[in-house]
Each structure stands twice: as C-alpha cells, then as structure tokens.
Image (cartoon, rainbow, N blue to C red; front, top):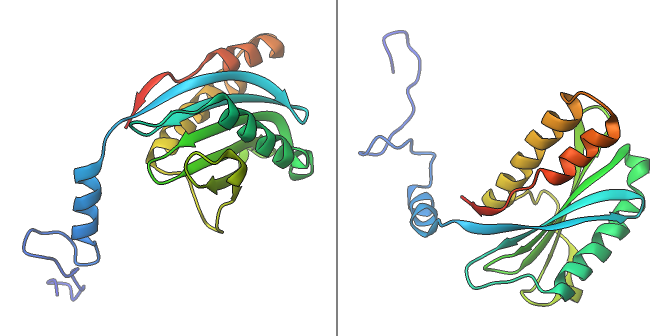
Length: 181
C-alpha cells in the first residue's frame, strides 16, 4: 500500500509487474526479427481498388499461385463490402508466415473506419485459406504494413489537396518496400 492507501501492483524482483508473463514475453523478444515486405501492385477486385503486399517470413515466398488465391479470397470478401460502407479502397496482405499462410483484407469504410478480414491456412496451401477465428487481429509485421497504409490514407486522401483522381494515384504509389520490425 502507498501512503494514500492505494494498492501498488505486485512486482517480480526485476520490477516486472506480476501480471506480465515474463517468460513468454522474453521468448518472443528473443525470436523477434525483421520480415520482408514487397508491394505486389494494384488491381481492381469486386469493384474495389486493391493495393497488395507480400509479407515474408525468413525462407518463405509468395508464389504467383498464392497471390492469385489471395486475390480470389479478397474478391469474395469485397463482393459485399459496399453493404459495410466501403469507400472502394482496400489493402491486401499475403503473409507467408513461419507457422502458416495469412491473407488480410483491409478496407476503408465510412466514418473514418476500416473493415478487416483475416484468413488463415497451412503453409504453402493457397486453396486451404479459411476465415480466421473470431478476434484474430494482425501480427506485429502485418500491423506495421497497415500502419503505413493508415498514414498513406490520411496523407494522400484525407489531408491531400487537388484532384481526387491524382490523390488516389498518389495513395497507390505510396508503398512500403523492404523490412519491417
């Protein structure tokens, strides 16, 4: 207890709050590494302009077959996106992860919000993609790409000036390419 009668958090000897799983967090930090991100271009899918990326775990690649399968998954999801308030702009992440494959379809919708769908499957099986479990959210590497895309959306489309078509073209050209952590 503090002088004012407030309860202080329990702490381990190294000052880590007891609520933190120190072993699991340390193991994650020890295995943490950069992942490669490369743009896969833009396409029109189900009436949406879709900017696509590959996210690659070490030793993994995104094949053309996997990229096509991801586009099919995205197109099926985007087919009803206008009902969810879609503005017609989307980002597709094709993540060849260490533990499997992931496809994320991030769509800008009304009210400054976004719609996100996550699909998962076994590594190297593009036909095995299925909707992720309820509550599944982007991993740290996927979130880095989505953070770039959030900034690009704001910079070019919300804060941008000039003709809308030119602002959309600027958003399309603003891609992340290299390593993310």
